[in-house]
Length: 291
Image (cartoon, rainbow, N blue to C red; front, side, top):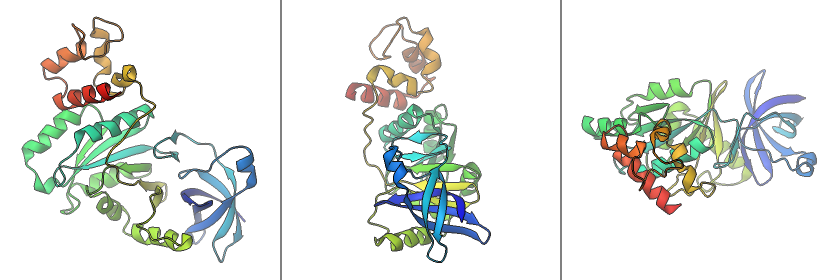
């Protein structure tokens, strides 16, 4: 029997493929055919694949074919992602906005539609909410403010994720797992099911995993990040990944302006007028100097 499904996890040569069968959703443990190694094709989490079921009772199969990919991310290495939802806490811990900007640059480089979710709205002031909105409303498709603990704004996340495959990224301790569990209360059970198959505890693996929410809706939880390097990035290209800088670049006097020391710079003029965020610009300068 041949089925089509989505690879939700890959580890130690085994791939776990979620298929919708006549009786509902089912997870199959699969090996990849040798032809993939020969053709240097690596199945990725997020790939849509055709599998040949070898044991329906045991939920075993072989991956026969990887279907065409819409896109492929380098970090995390996954395929067919529709959007990224970057989650940061507004407090406890205080948001590391330099790290947030690195996430935004990385997703912008890879052409991924990105939304920002600030969690723990219940423990901050309206002024702080306004400050973060002013800084980030021009550089993401959406900026959401939620409280997973008080169930504020969680319906907006559900609407944003519905019918799409979304990667969730952000540092540890920001409430990412609470949001995952809200979207899919069986997420811990699904993780445990795979962990049981591979003989590892769910908290010992650092591999990305897709979690099935409902038909055509998946979320990918990724390990928490405390730092983020982007080795492919060159300093002269950095401004291209700050969306609010791009329309200002033609008004700079010098072609190839770095927007740091040059006179008559369109970005710096906008900064002086309060048209772009001082926080974002400061993070840009810091990252430029590092590069």
